[in-house]
Image (cartoon, rainbow, N blue to C red):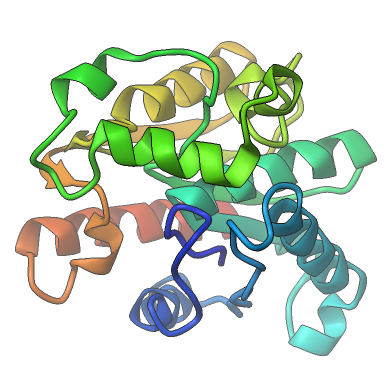
Length: 230
């Protein structure tokens, strides 16, 4: 599990409830990754750490009590961005993944999307926040920002990717790029479950203890992940 926090914040503690519930609901061994954070450690530090962790688990999965045919990646927000990038890299390396769970993922550092304007302010994460976090994580070099490791939506192809469960929130500036990623995978023939949750905001994955709507969304997303892990 790759935690969110805009590549600048978040850690194992901020997502402890999230990972514990995933372990319970999905009936899976969950490995949480404490990757390096910007601005002290900008791209590619977080990506490198998450990829290294995924390699470690894949290469020694018996030590973790997992199954080689049931390896998945998961993340929310910045963690969803990193999980998507790891899934693309695993595809290119010929390493199999059974599934990927991406919750309100950041997928595009290059383009603009209507939800950036529609939900610019007032919903915890604002559009200016997104722009500032992107700058601190990946700088301003178009080549870096347009690479699939930073902008998964800009990958050259999406065929052969792991089955995906993608959840977005109605009142989130990242909504449309997450939905665009789901559409790109679907168009490439990837098995995708995608849903935009009405009335919810960015960070709903962490809000299940206090919000019935968030709880229902997390229940559904984890159930869909469990289905793909068999």
